[in-house]
Amino acid sequence: MKIRSAMMVLISVLVLVFSSVAQAQDMPDVDLCFGLAEADCAAIEGATGDILLSAENFSIDYSIDLNVTGLPDGDILFSHSGIGSLAIDPTAEFPISMSLDTLNNIDAMGDTFTDPIPVGIVDGILYVQVEGAWQGVNLIEAMDDPEFAQMFEGLNDPEAMADEMMGEMPDMDPETMEALGSLLSIDGFLSQTRSGDDFQFTADLGTLFTSPEFSEAITSAAEMDESGMVMGLGMMLPMLLENGTIQLTRHLNTELNAVDRVELAIDGVINAAMMDPELEDPIVIDLDFSFQVGGINESPVEFAVPADVEMVDPSSSEF
Image: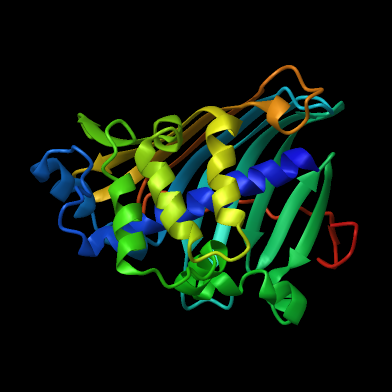
């Protein structure tokens, strides 16, 4: 429970800090290119991705790897990857078709799972193979179920989904806005570089949390918080997070004028003793994610519908 609460502390403050990036548009003294040359900044920010938005089909290749060590109940080792193709037809009854082969390797607190899982979507039917048996779900019928459809309603309104995830930010007075905006200019906190067609954005959270500017910003923000939570979080984070970096790499396909590959790396070391004095070792978090698209309008979905499929109610425990 203490570890879960500490993670919520970290996430809450990060939401507060990074939300100021969007509001910093009105702050002329903030370099929103974060050190990137003006021409390079214009190139990556001007990548419209129109061809990706209008593509009829494309290939996808993605992976996610998560390693967490130092947890009292055991380490977590998780890897998942997938490769396949996806097609979009807005005029169809169900607009998405897909053929995907995934690989999975999970070792979490003593429980292990290693298995490939093929996945397909054809004519609105989702097919998933688990342990050699095929299960199917009629997505068209499922979407008529209010509870099931609610899980996907954000896809129809991405802005509303983003607002829900971020939460409603409180109104900030000019002094607090200025204090939060100053965090973006802390030397060594945020930076952006270009290597070839790869643009790498880096956030060093350790530099942020130990800076005097962070203390000042938290003090200013705490004046709006009667509960005292903001001040408590601000005082705890520099002692809780021993090291933390976030790196986002975007590959610019200059021919398409689109970002066709995204890589995210998160590395963190948490002082576990701050949450539980009996924990001697730090908690080390290593997350790597990548997603790439290609074969624009050259990758039609090829998925052989299985002959023996057990149709499953998506609300049942079997699915």
